[in-house]
Length: 399
Ligand SMILES: [Zn+2]
Image (cartoon, rainbow, N blue to C red):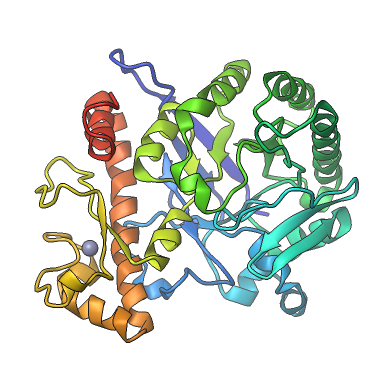
């Protein structure tokens, strides 16, 4: 496995209570440092949905997010190639979250010796040996350890919470104790919405941290939602306390990387950064692109605000004769070369190129947004910037 290191730079911003921070992720297998906060590039079955690597815009952070669920079905093919990178011919660093942000996780799929992954074709059980094998085959740059996390809000009993902690802890120890897969771990912090159980689990993790400081690379906030489409509209303010309290207890470890799986709508990205998260799932882009949604929110104050909308659906009759680009003045390949009516026509005739052009634009827009986020954090203009984004999503109430 590649060696990785993460260094954080706190932000001085006296006008807003925010845990926002900048970070630098150095990975031995690539020459360039990855700056955070950053969105990852979501990959399924070895490819970015609907786009070939050549057409991924240059401003996209080349850190691949490959959920284990999308791999478990191709395990046999993987066994014939030496590693996933060989199999899919990938050169960029890989993070493997356990679950897929695009697919809903249903309750009741876990046992004492296994956890379930949910894929497009249903539930796949993964016991600790298969989990280990999969990680060895994929050889991710970093990965999230197996966990339970089946703790739906308002429906979880005390007994279930205890099982959740016991199993997640056992799975974690299995990763820590197996030398072949014991580096660069992201630890899922479980305990649902229950303050006491989250605290109990965190205490166990804090006890492990000194011994395994070299193995544990970051923290992922888990057990808070059930993944899938509903997370696009999650109310982050309502679960803020869960994250804030945990993070305050981890203050002595400033260089742990923080992440959380979610369909990260842009205004929630701002809230996530205020909570001090460093790495964001990129699953929002294939999610909206699949639905023909074009991002148009103003992420840069120099961008002419050509529309009052944050996004729109190109699969609407009004674009039949649209002579403009998907977004006027956008510098992406799709916008510089094609019109709305052309993309509309491609969708109507079910040509894959339609989704490709939509994805190119959305990737460019979303990752351009993250570039601006980092710039504003660096320049101490975070407070103005966050208000500019939040106001577009909920005019005049979200300051
Ligand atoms: Zn564009």
